[in-house]
Length: 450
Image 1 (cartoon, rainbow, N blue to C red):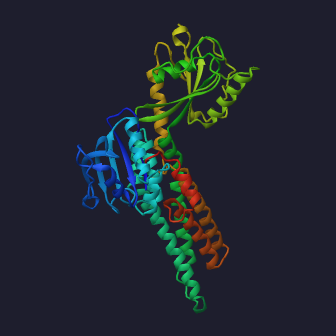
Image 2: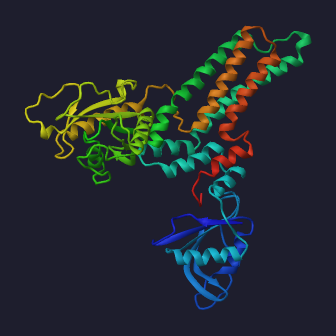
Image 3: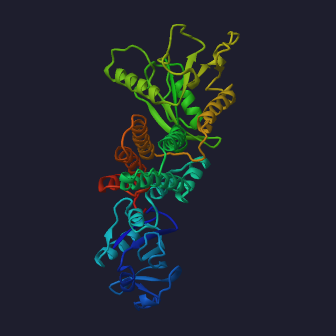
């Protein structure tokens, strides 16, 4: 039996402790009583599934807490096993008392993701749906939440199962044809098969192309603020966060390393990055900060290139010469200190101190970010998981191999081998074929209690 808190432990109204395993209700009978006056063990066999039971938690005859226990009998539970959820009063002390009691009663603390892993192993959900649980918990925007729900409810899995079924059918026809090879019976035309494989490759590629958009929706838009030292990058960073997160001073090189904070604007999640000022320096620490800043620029989805209106450097490229101009918003800062200065038309003029022009900058950022999260793909499914993307890419490679075998006159056994390999690759997405290492890698990234 395993147990873990299903809510954060600390100062709160309640703490929910989840238990799962064959002896769950036997353990419950040892610690749960309907009476607060003295311990009177409940009859576990009479606890109906999907009911809430009010009572009291006892240890060695001593009252620990008043609680509500929710009962879920196998197989109609999250894990497919007998499950009980104890809703006790919040607080770390009470949780420690109950968890120690559960340990002494034969329960062990669950590993990260162990409840969801048991749900998968017991057939309550496939692997893609299990991964959606973590995505749903992680979601910070409506778009991310909607994508996770579609995956959790099986829409994505249904698409994968449909593709897998087609591959199984093609393999079956090719391998059955081998059995009748002496009779010269053709169950599938090679020209027809080639057309079908080309369509499958196109569908796989359409799905794969949605990954970049899905990754941004799930993880957020990486928005890097870059520029020479002392142009006001940290002031812009603080303005968007509405707090003094970064140190601001007139001394160039104040920011020695990048700072990163999450930010949601108009329903879009951003990873806002304040980078170190880019310049040639002999300072070892600052030099490392500049190196890291350049890496963040390469990883960014959008870049705010900040230029000081009071001291513009016409030769500055700020390390954006290799960045797609579609990703760059040029920002001229300190407009409040440059009265009468001719404002350039290739960017947005702002003051991060007074707020002048910040609404225009806000709008420009959101327009570019919306283009990244809208996309132009024809697929009705968006993938957000790198593992899924890699499985689809492998399947495409094998289907391309099958296509080459058909064009070169390869035998059915060689064509079938490639198609079966493609089928195995997409089967990994939903867990029809998955080794222990893959499962452990997936579920150890979950939070405790899920």
